[in-house]
Amino acid sequence: TAARITVSTSAPVGAIDRRVFGSFVEHLGRCVYDGIYEPGHPAADEQGFREDVLALVRELGTTTIRYPGGNFVSGYRWEDGIGPKEQRPVRRDLAWHSTETNEVGLHEFAHWAKKAEVEPMLAINLGTRGELEALDLLEYSNLPTGSALSDQRAANGSPEPFAVKMWCLGNEMDGPWQLGHRDATDYGKLASRTAKGLRQMQADLELVACGSSGSGMPTFGTWERVVLEHTYDDVDFISAHAYYQPIDGDVDSFLASAVDMDRFIEVVAATADHVKAEKRSDKTIHISFDEWNVWYQKRYEDEERITALEEWPKAPRLLEDVYTVTDAVVFGSLMISLLKHADRVKAASLAQLVNVIAPIMTEPGGPAWKQTTFHPFAITSRLARGEALDAVVSAPTIATAKFGDVPAVDGVVTRDPETGAVAVFLVNRNRTEPITVEVGLEGLAGLEIAETHTIADEDPDAVNTKDDPDRVTPAPNDSASVDGSTLTVTLPPVSWTAIGLG
Ligand code: AHR
Image (cartoon, rainbow, N blue to C red):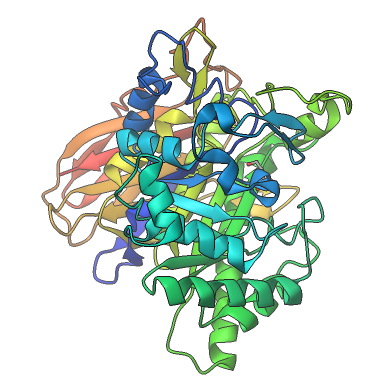
């Protein structure tokens, strides 16, 4: 079987914002405690952060980190996490039914983010708190000394502001599970008032209004329209969240998850543009896809919600999905979807970073290792630079129960105008057949293959574990060749491939 991808170099889709390679650290399960932070671990730094985990985070190539939640943020008092650790209050985290010790807060996160070489992106509690607390947090974080809260920051050890540019105005406020959940009108008004206040304190912030928690939400579409009608002039981004999993063993639909992500992005962009028309505005709202991943949510709902109501454990093992080869292929295809929409998706956060639905796993006192999904993220972040090019895919189709007939192959091509380096990312969703793909790189003749990576396995359910951390790793794809301006490569069944050309 054969497929063809025709790439147009003359009209790039859009510049790839490096923030698309962001991730997310929430106070949830073992993401922070026993994840990035474990005082007493042989690899811990003087503040208790694991250097081995930091090295993996840098290798992952993540650019921004959203913090501290997630559902957690809607019950969070940021002041609990500042000042001497021994004086910090212990609280009950209602979102994850856990005990929060507040050993890690703003200062510790800023210290970690610097070492991880990532830009922090903070989420504000607009579930159970309001404009004043948001203003206080901004003053504490970003103002130079000379005001009460910025002086308090300095007294707590950080005279230099944290200089956080990007702020999420709440989290998943459309979700009935969210503490302080409200309807689109109430949230839109609150987000608008909060954004206006924040900008009075610092004009050049980048603000994200909450979009939908998923395209399956009953309010999807209406939520975005109403929220943006209230906030259009106040914000820069609307968020999108999506998690994918196989339902009832339907692997074909699962492999086609990026079709849903494509549609999701396109209709949110269309909805934002509808409001743009209503407002006769010159401004374009971008999408912050600030939670995305494969998440076996059904498993969590059915089996793992075991935190009995009388127990409030500290850092319990929650949402610790172990990812297969198939999961990594779907994951790689979701990254292709984000890149295909580089004109509108200007920020994204893989949810999450460590232990909790994460590319990096740790054991207390033990090793840190890479899940299968680590590899497509790290390779894409490293190779996808510059701009995404328009690519027309012509491929055999696969019949899926959820999305109808979908192309068996999907892909995206990127080009760095500065270096001329080109990268091709491809997925084969066919479960039994290899597919040979011809990629027509018109206008890009003379390129040579610099590197190839394919994730595939005879056992699509193979996983990496503590005892076998390199069971699944990318391998070179020796079938790749370039003839003139045509790249040809054979993709094994259920596979993800990246090719760097220069
Ligand atoms: O990432 C896990 C959870 O998923 C987040 O806390 C929440 O925002 C979403 O529902």
